[in-house]
Amino acid sequence: MSLRSSPLPPAGVSPDRLVRPELLGLSGYHVADAGGLIKLDAMENPHGLPGPLREELGRIAATATMNRYPDPQAQALKTALMVAFGVPQREMLLLGNGSDELIQILAMSVARPGATVLAPEPSFSMYRLIAMWCGLRYVGVPLRADFSLDAAAFVAAIERERPALTFLAYPNNPTGNLFETDAIEAILAAAPGLVVIDEAYHAYAQTSWLDRVPSEPGLVVLRTLSKLGLAGLRIGVLIAQAQWVAEFDKLRLPYNLNVLSQLFATRLLGETALFAAQIQSILDERTRLASALGTLRGVHVYPSQANFLLFRVAHAERVFDGLRARRVLIRKLLGSHPLLADCLRVTVGTPGENDMFLDAMQELLK
Image (cartoon, rainbow, N blue to C red):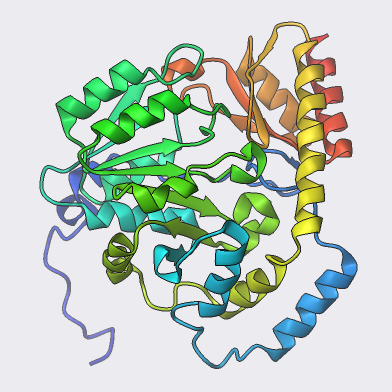
């Protein structure tokens, strides 16, 4: 049958009729076009790989069997990750196409009717979005005005909502701070479901809950290679007790990590000295950038244990637009949550990129 002679669809077939109402009202996750701009909006490591290493990756790519599906279990990469992260058992690892896929798998795994996802707010927006995509009820618990975690309020929300899934970003995004250890301990003790500690910025915070996984049945730790400097490879890592990983793996799509991502990441995880030097450079620049920003008129910089800085400034919309006009792209957060009024977030870039950002800020605020 040709397309020309195909029967017409039934009258009234449209997204309004078929798509779930809660999805129709959502806006998609927006990624700004950074073409031609100094890109300080996405918490990437700004340092590339040295030439000889790039050439070696080219030779590795030339040997890849592009005509075959990738290793469905990514065994070589899991072995490299066990060494890099100190994970004692391969069965404790689940790999995703970025952490977003792993968050979605977690949400899908507990999506019984009436199940609830709990998270502090403001935090990573994908916790709320993915919960809604999966048909889960989402409850946000506001942070204090200084972005610290109100442990009493959060534990009360746990007791009231009985969440199947609780997310804690550590450090928190977009605020950059680490939640207090005592608060997290109280949450682990109170939670009736899984507690997911998202350690996307572990490389910069240099503290972790990973060693608690073997003794905490409901604890899941997320990591990513994106913030380390491999954002283009899209590799997320979930670490949990093997009984949980076996269930989550049933929801993972086959061949979710492509051939080149597996090969490159396996090779690059051995470059510990290179990445350590890049991370130290970013930490040094974070200190310099925070100090310089704090001297500008009307700017309040919040403490950060990540590779970005949150700051509040009057007329933030005008400042954001002024930076973009000067070819500097950062992240605008005002309007995303009441606690983030007049807030902007800047990724720590190279020294030259940071200088251009600071020069533009000084010009705008003089």
